[in-house]
Length: 109
Image (tube, rainbow, N blue to C red; front, side, top):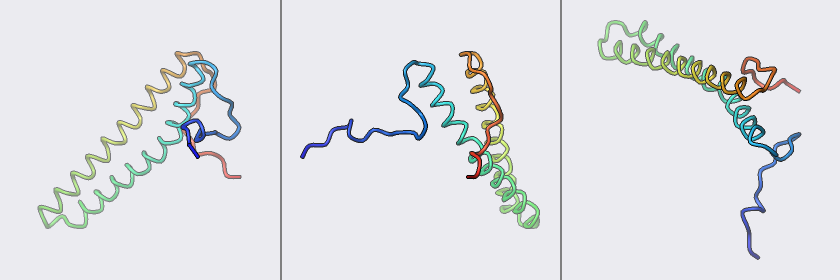
């Protein structure tokens, strides 16, 4: 039995096959919008982990520096996430889509 790539197509529930380039962009943007809150939450956790290490081990210079580095990289990641969201918003509205909202998790069912 031969298997072809077409046999393993991905189907998104409640969504039809994309018909236009705008549909493809919308699917891509929707996936990124779902990922942004998760990644931003992880960046926030990294920031708070660095803050805890920075405060708890203020006597040890090496641990103090590691905590400071974690805080800086957490802030950088948050900045990048907000910037990506802004760029997506610009592209999304520039293509002509409406009803662009904040990136939120899907509702609990």
